[in-house]
Image (cartoon, rainbow, N blue to C red; front, side, top):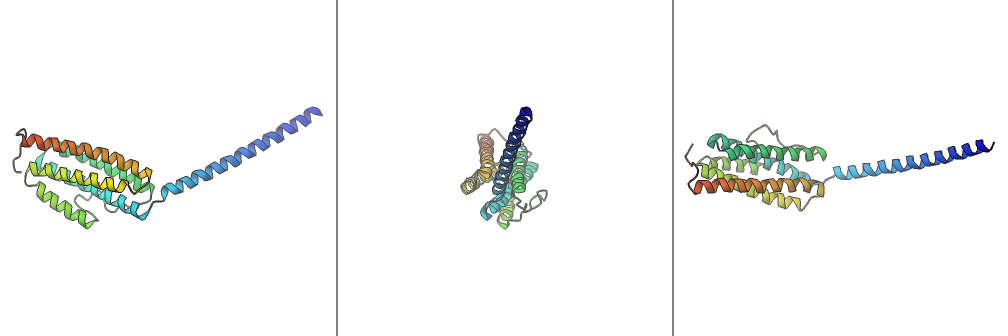
Length: 195
């Protein structure tokens, strides 16, 4: 009888422990759900910024692609691929936060933002004049991208800011590369013939 009483106590204790663990697990699951919901909520400004930055990275990719075709300069081809990876990083964020991508990324030279469309057309025109002009266009694009990322990183939360920071780091590297290529031409070490 003593053994039976002991087993009943053990089973009762085990049941109480399991009940406590299940309750704790349920609270943990609810907390994770709340955290996930908070992560998926972003402001209208953050949504607008993601859409804009996606298009700005697309502008860089499309301009570098076009200028690379005209000038056959390795910097344009290499950095064009990096700009595609920037677009992919922003697409992942947009998917996570359920932000609609504003334009088909495969529509080269096409933008939903009218100002970016005008900028693209103007930059292609300028960059077509000479390799030197094309590299100056690339420097302008990277400087603008850096300024826009700095501005937008200040008004978002850490999950988006982390991506913006990586893009900032890469844009600084691109800027340095384009400046070096331009300096090489200005110092007489590169070709600046018209197309």
